[in-house]
Image (cartoon, rainbow, N blue to C red; front, top):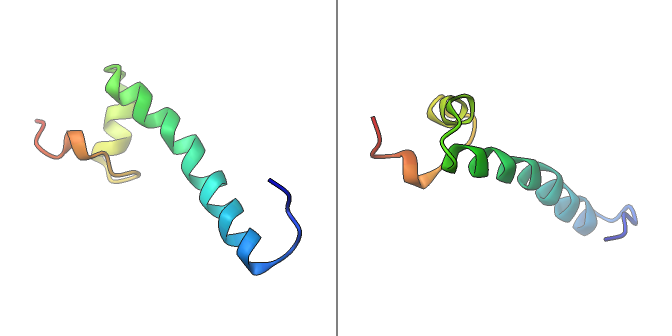
Length: 54
């Protein structure tokens, strides 16, 4: 990916730079790490699997 200064590339970079780190939180929550689960339950990110959990 090349950051060339265009609006299109800005949108792409924003998506990658915001979503990729979030995937780590999803993986940790899926593995059962309580800190990651709490972050997701507090609405920092939305994780479909936690919608019905207690």
